[in-house]
Length: 612
Image 1 (cartoon, rainbow, N blue to C red):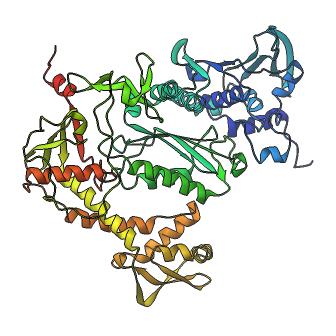
Image 2: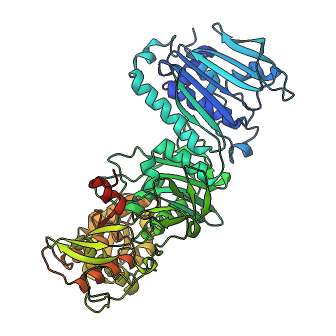
Image 3: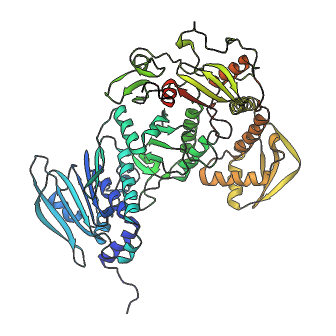
């Protein structure tokens, strides 16, 4: 008797389902992606018992013709690709043709659809039954679009069902899938109901105000209040979206959404680029928050590398990594004191306009807001807050060679539009904090943390202008590595030279370090070389050497900054405030801690219950 035999279709589909259908959230993801590919503008998701009992998804897409219904539940049947050329530049979310067949193998699945665009309700329904999963097609009334109903998930694979978590946990996974797809398509309305209760009702919209409202609904209003909008274009790539300020960090990476051509992904290369961009401003152990969209030619990215399509492979990973890092690094560097704050019912747009979220009114910023009687911002005439100053100064300025008002109080003769973003110093508290008054209220500054960042940025600027100085070693240091690492080192010789290192090939599995950066003479250069090679192999780039040099400059800045309990004069305090306004990343110290905070008059009034 032959040992090799063909698997029956049902068993083959159940094996395939192990890759595609992990939990109820997997079913929702696959069906929603099909709905979006079908051109749906509205999707309704109804689930019971977190999807283990019932999942019903209805869309108003183009529907499925009656003659195609039997194939809709067959394996490897799809309308989205026809040739290898289509596979090499996939533009749809789904394309494998496995989802419905795999879902039907582990549940009771009924598919009802109508492809008649003339308003006719003459649709049909199909379900798969029996050992060979034969499709049975029957007429059924249905408006244009498709409804997929999945009942009793894993009823015939009890071992899989035992691995499901509690209803609360499973619904969290399912809800997260809906959130991701809702963020990927602002032009589609989503409604999610759980156990007949509406959980999310997201209206469709393409305007910037409607996009920001959806992001605030999905990610929370606190994220939008602490996020900046970025948009960067090159001939090959476009990156846009929202990135959280370093002060809005998370204990875990649960608020990170990255989309490539509308497809939500989790990619190590992307994560590494974002981590590098935040390296200088994020407190250790914290994670940034972001909602970012990368657009590029579909031929430059391979989406067919994972059954669940959560991972992609870029044709030129190094170029993508560099583009994302430089875009985010520049955006975060531009965050400094001087960005005028908005009232609670206002959102900023990329073109500089301001949206009143209460009334929906959109107006240019200079005509939208004005300081109110309590020192806050309200809707009306031009705002009196001055825009942020220019880039950081390269030269060092002594705190004493400036000419701010010598009076501790803010000069009354100055108009509010002339008041700097950080205002004018009033006093020093406990030798640690500077108290300052600006147009909105009270500013508190940690003088050591602020001066530390200023000194650090100037040291980095000076080092960049001078270049990395290197020194030769009297005796070259040999490092035993793998053949792959030797190949990478040979290909990256120019990169190492730019970083102040001369790395030569000494054998098939041997590298020789002949020169090292002067600032790293006391570092573990061998381990540093291994880390750089590891980064080059995995991500195509590395900033290990720059990071080590920045750590040294950071330490120098820390020791060279004003210390706590040092008394500063009013002119010295004002000079420090002006330097903060001109220095990149001055909102955080070298270790990622905040350097200043604002208390508006409105917030102070709340503390003292004024006006109640």
